[in-house]
Length: 132
Length: 76
Image 1 (cartoon, helix red, strand yellow):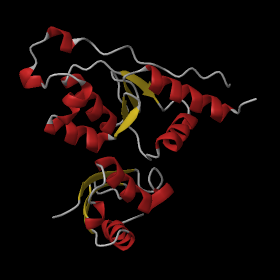
Image 2: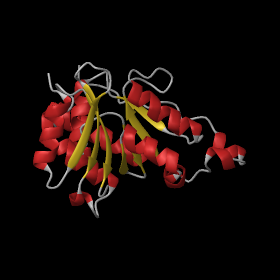
Image 3: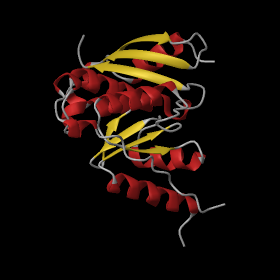
């Protein structure tokens, strides 16, 4: 039988595998609970890139298991195609340099002409906690 | 409570040749920004460079140091 921590870890790995772009954050895209998470959401929304989001606050074990998997100590964490892109600083730097748009496969805001690039973000994904 | 000098010293001691400029973002001693220049970063991805700095502080990140915002470079 797997431990609760293993189950959370597996749920996180599944979420990363199932979503091309996924942001682990404090709060939700609509109501971020931390300035760094808010700034990361703003960068993704400015690019019109659809993304899934996971709120790590409901259970401290989500953050603990995520950091163990990603070898990254802080929140937010952005994954694209299964790979960790980075936290808020890297997201912001890459947004400003255009690298973020490139890695997400969308146009930069100034060049955005395709309406498809402005699709709303996917509904926030929550990791269901069946442990309590 | 950690100070900007503590953080600067720990980074510069742990990463060979590193030079760090650390500011306290809100004066509260728990949100910092560090700009770190180290030849040891050459050839590392941005992620690896940031991991290297986070590794200096281990569990203090998320503990006494609530947030450490980073800018890393391999040369000045």
